[in-house]
Image 1 (spheres, rainbow, N blue to C red):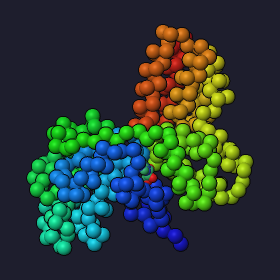
Image 2 (cartoon, rainbow, N blue to C red):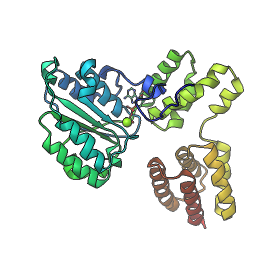
Image 3 (cartoon, helix red, strand yellow):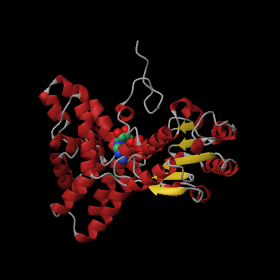
Image 4 (cartoon, protein in one colour):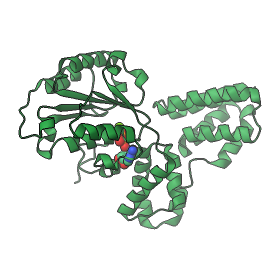
Length: 335
Ligand SMILES: Nc1ncnc2c1ncn2[C@@H]1O[C@H](COP(=O)(O)OP(=O)(O)O)[C@@H](O)[C@H]1O
Ligand SMILES: [Mg+2]
């Protein structure tokens, strides 16, 4: 029997497409020139500071860190030199004390390594913004104690969640959102490699559905691939219908001011099943403006509501509860 796949782990035997199509070298990283130039300089022997990569999900932060380490260390010493802790690992204070400190302490001989990497070790800590403040403080001490041969690459979405002494010890690089064309090009090359070509229009749909997160778009492609391979045109059309269900939005626009709480409960369930949430809220806002459902005074209130709700959903709060809160507040705004 096939072994179950550990989704989210970089150690899985069955590769997810995110891993399969992860950029292998720095040259494959699109649209992040500043950080790529700095990392290439470090490969040439320039000083390597501790690094902090931040920015929206699916813009190449993890890929850049891994590609750099692969190019820096020959394969035979890679595992001695790189400690890669990602979101699926426990990273409380105990782990900082044990794993990270032990790895940092370990002294290594040159082991035939190139001169610029003779004793260097790198610790990649993905999603540091999810670490507790205590764990971050412990990590800060490790950074201070072992800076001679150990470099940290910290990765997160929001710098504001890191403690200041950690941030101030790193060179910061903000990863930019990837323009639509860059994303579509990448998706197209994956489809071609998998032998399941898609039209430009379909690729744009997948991209919009993922809301700028190329990892999500790549996952969507993977989950779509059996449908594409099956040749079932109606299933394909159904899946690619798009996340912005215009009819549903129109209904919500009209009915929300007078809807009962029960109606809103039901509506929330329908929306949760059929849409991604964030795109629904954005389209609803746009449509309400287009159809003159809200007046100028309400636009500001609604804009704030949209922003708050989007942030919560993107931060991982429950979609259904957020939509419910959003729609109930919206109704009150019009009451
Ligand atoms: N800048 C980029 N250039 C090329 N591919 C990218 C880029 N950003 C994301 N990807 C694609 O998306 C997937 C996830 O990227 P990842 O580096 O894990 O994003 P992040 O760490 O910023 O969330 C990768 O496997 C790759 O296919
Ligand atoms: Mg990442």
